[in-house]
Image 1 (spheres, rainbow, N blue to C red):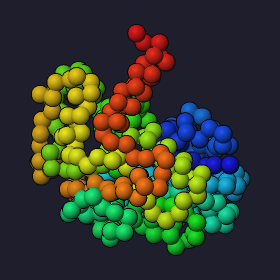
Image 2: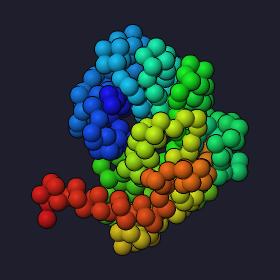
Image 3: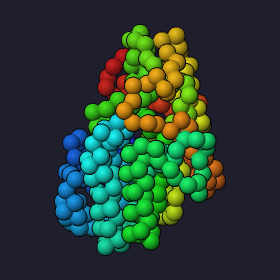
Image 4: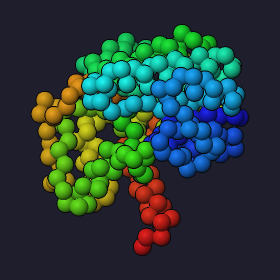
Length: 300
């Protein structure tokens, strides 16, 4: 299969590359060169370039994983957020339609308002920040322009390596605690933390089976960010005393966040072989992946 992965240098994109063995992969990126695949530098704000790049490749399928995910930046710079998360998605969906390519659009739990949590695929999205609004607009563009597509919603992606110059939540906590630095983590914000390699495996199965519609692909455990940090402490035998519990109202955020945006992954667990993993399973896998990374670098 000729496959395009957007955001191939990012946290999810890099994991997708490791799971896409046997496919002819074209790695679309902007700033951070992907580890594998045929690199294609593409600026998501340049719709003509997007169309030109896709027409040159003529893929059988596209996984659109690229996005502006900085929630506060999206709130402050709405034109940029709309351009990357909505307009670029619409352009990609239009090209996919023209080329007859199957599209998987990676969306977010932030399309929900967070008033009750454990959202199912059929629950009504009601975003409370502009990031969620742009991602929801992207979902609607995909649905309007394509007959064959999958909208894959996920939550708090983390993994063993920094990607696109950013350190994800799990690595941020681990790095700080290993250096005896305190971290402040919310006790009243509930999510479904998702290991990037688990997510990539689920997405690739959906792609190869050409599953359509909307599906929640996230971790199988609902927990607060504080409890997520505590799980990291337990797996790495670190002291949780440096984790400062704080309420969301005390966080210096510019954009509002949903209080409970956890996702119900019953559908994914019932139809996929690569099922959503629990937090304890994911912690073990993350530790193994970090250990492998250290060995590969020759560190003893």
